[in-house]
Image (cartoon, rainbow over all chains, first blue to last red):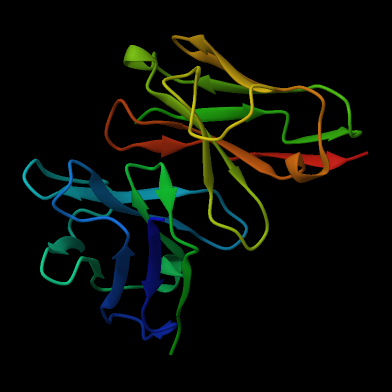
Length: 113
Length: 108
């Protein structure tokens, strides 16, 4: 059974970098899938952050592109999200996805001093 | 950016009823790259429909999607207790991929 599990610090200071890890079990990054991130601020809808394919490229939401980096690690089967210069507006629940057909449970991140 | 507007915001129905949820796009969604998701409290979003009308794995046939262009519909017949949740539509044809604001299906 394929599972995604997000992890990372629940609290990030303003202007800092949000760093999240998605651990993949039961599947391999070397598959044909796109691996990405989606977030949901409290009380709001879902926002696509971006996605990456091992051999096919990368797409970012233009609204975040200047601050975000997605990377994949085949050796550890992990997907990474880095979001720089965070503000309170980046407070959200962050989800890891595979082709949008499989999602992790999500991890809450609060940006606050 | 393709803006997706879902209606109604909240739908109050009883178990056994039929639910009809709508998703309207600000621009044509090419190749019907439109998906529907269910979100229950404390759970990961679950893909229900992709390609506007194709059910994802293990989705019962009482859940169906239809529509094309700018108007899409999710129908759920014979509502069961586990169907009462929030539903989102998403277009994945044009970057940035965007989601609707959601429809809350609640028990009447």
